[in-house]
Length: 180
Image (cartoon, rainbow, N blue to C red; front, side):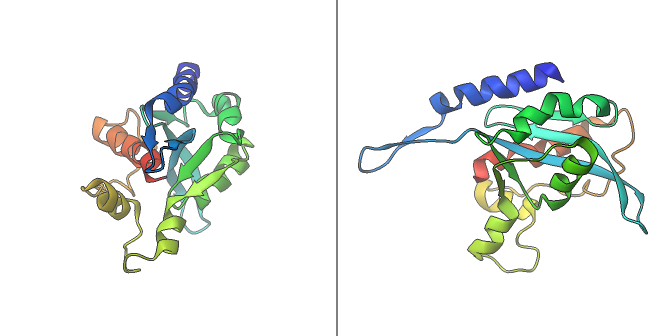
């Protein structure tokens, strides 16, 4: 996990050299330091709403990582805490209320500088409220191809995770920085 966080920091350090655009008036726009953040949960008791964090996905404009939060649970705060609490890095989530709550209650991480693409989509109100704001549809609108969300309710406790589940999880974070 340490090498994952080191790569995320390297990506953030080089971010301003990669994502630049010029405005009509000649001013330059530099993309902010940002990471996409998502989590997959396994429901242990649906009646009492008890869940366990199974995966944490973190992505920059260049890289995406899927972290096994079951196996690495004792180390999550140590390695991800500084990054997620850093106000100089925008954390981008999509409907991240449960993610943020679980980071706080399970790992004592208080995420700083948060942008929620679900809330932005609803606020922009460009689309119908009937399912038009889910991540799959929002990605579809901005990237041209909707995300396949069939694995959303999969059992994220199984190990080893099949490649298709790892790819699904990575995609949930991979597209978030570009939605900022």
